Every structure is written in structure tokens, then in C-alpha cells.
Image 1 (cartoon, rainbow, N blue to C red):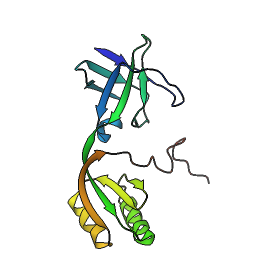
Image 2 (image 1 turned 90 degrees about the horizontal axis):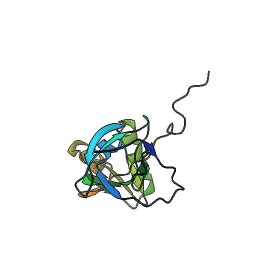
Image 3 (image 1 turned 180 degrees about the vertical axis):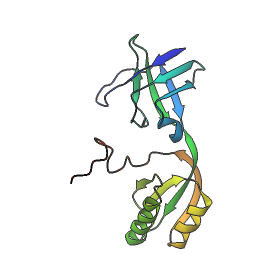
Amino acid sequence: MITLTNIVPSDNSLDARLEIELPYDMRKKSRFKAVARCGEEVGLILPRGHILRNDTLLTNDEGDVAVVKAAAEKVSKASVNDPIALAKAAYHLGNRHVPVQVGEGWLRYQHDHVLDDMVTGLGLDVVVELAGFEPEDGAYSNGGHHHHH
């Protein structure tokens, strides 16, 4: 088993020998085992507090390089041509601490029929699809949550 321990800065262009496809809930973890597309087992022991994004490169001290791919997973995509309705839906999803991916005229979140009903009630059209899920990092993703007194 190959153990990957380092997240490569995004400005690096190493060639990856392994490809690891992971759903969002796995990409939030720092220590787990996975299987690369080629069938090789890999262990990840990474610094805590990072979300692995699509195309993130991982390495180890032996020179192995792997690329992370966002696996297609069941998500809801809510669309509308009205920016006010879209903002209201984003607000209500955020108020429930739901991770949200934002696109032009649409929001994507992990499928939940209760959330689908809420968003539909706000005037958006919702479709359930299989897609890679890349939600926003959040307001405090760079440096942690700090309160100034």
C-alpha cells in the first residue's frame, strides 16, 4: 500500500501516476484508505483542515504522486433565472449550514428531498443528478474562524 502524506501546492504540475476518485464526504477527511482507479490501495495521512478538491495532487517522501478526482455523486441542482430568488435559496441553505456549490444561475447541494421541497417552494427548479460536488469553502476557510473583540 502506498501512503500519501503531502498536499502539493496548486501551482505545481507534477505528473500523477495514480488517480483517486472520491466523493465530497471522503475528501473532507484527513486519514483514510482508498483504492486508486488502477486497483492499488492507498492510505492518506494528510494535514487536518483541508478539503481535497478536484485535481488536487498528493505526494509522499518516496516520490509517488496521485491526483484526486471528485466522484460523481447524487446531488440536487436548483436553477432559476431570477437572481433574487437564487440569493434567497442560497441564504436559506447557508442558514442550515448546507455545503453549497454556486454556479451561474444555479446552486448544487448533496441531495435531500426536504431541501429540494424548500428550494422548490422558493421558486427554483430542482433536478437530481450525478455530478462531482465542489461546494464553496466557507467564509473562514483561510486561517480559521476568528472573532475580534
